[in-house]
Image (cartoon, rainbow, N blue to C red; front, side):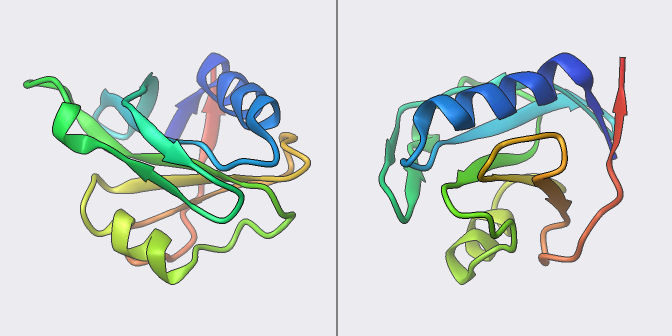
Length: 119
């Protein structure tokens, strides 16, 4: 999986800005490259975030999800795995302190996926 550098920088920034609340959105792109963020209405709290996918515009190419963890633990929870199974192939968790070292990518089963940052 690949992620565009400006998108990763945006994920880190919005996660930091939302702290200590979780944020959630969908990832869009082509093939195995995450290029854009699809922001839908969501409810974010200190321990969870729920996205309203019924608001997803038709024709959007969802390749996965993104959400933040306000703790330093980027490991997916049971609720995360449930969300992963419904949307796309790649799932990014950005954990506190929201740096280039504190994010991870997973497949729909919660297995780590190598992710390359590209320009």
